Length: 400
Image 1: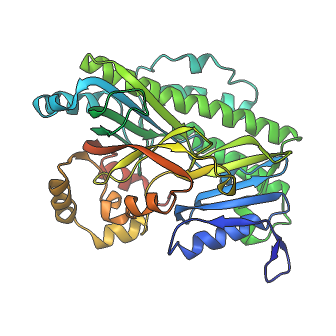
Image 2: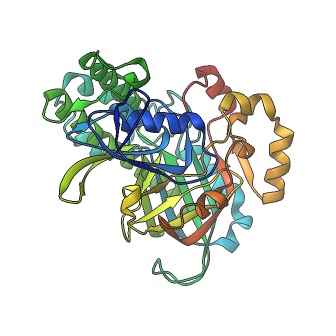
């Protein structure tokens, strides 16, 4: 153990990456100073967040921290590798564009007038009044995508080996990134506020890291809500992918997906702990995952190496190197358009705060975590849809 200036015990943590955001490191140290903290890790895509930094991994004893899970509970990525040859993409680009535009909706508060059907709505939403009150809202938003860095895109997947059980070559793939929408955000805020009320002793710098004891009714209730949001987030991706595939008359030859912004019960030696991965990808030994870059940079299909020093975790993306506000002030559309043309990317919609230049170099991030994951395939975005800028601007740009 090390000690901070107040002579508090600090749980051990390890940092991956170079020149990380100083505020992210400070947040990681704050998180490791909690009395329930056991071990931490900071991924190479790390940057400042609420409570635990984005890219932060934290193991705690017998508790769950709502803001260490994240505001967008169970945010996840999903990839479907299609039976359509990539060579057909240019010939049918217009059809792919229509599919992305019609089969999901982007932005804060977006919903469908006719709710989609999925078995997740048959789950128990009545275990507490607060979650039950969100069911209708969640149903209307089922199959929609978020704002910010959420996306749906087609691209070229390059397989140079048979590790995924497919022949080597170029494939057309669909990749999506979204989470539990308004219901998840509401649950996060509600239970974080509850945790703060239960821990008035916490100083200001630890306030967003207030926890719920898993033996308490509040802790058990949040855990059930988090797991429900995990199923709901998965259902969102199921609906989006199936809708797009049906639109194209295509099938998926292989599907890959993984959560981030979630908490798992795990073993740390002989001890059970709760591992929070906020903007971090599970990377247990042999576990497959997808780590996307930006709209103009590649993503990677990876296999976890099970590095226990990182609590079997890896980065969940390139990570921001500047805030949304800074990106809006610094870049204009001519900067973005030129880069997209150079990379052969067609952008349907996005906010200027998602400029690729606002993100770290994904290749550098991957190089800095060679001991956490191995790369199995490369994905290059070709047709990208994100939330239109006017919708995101209208709702504000405070969340990271």
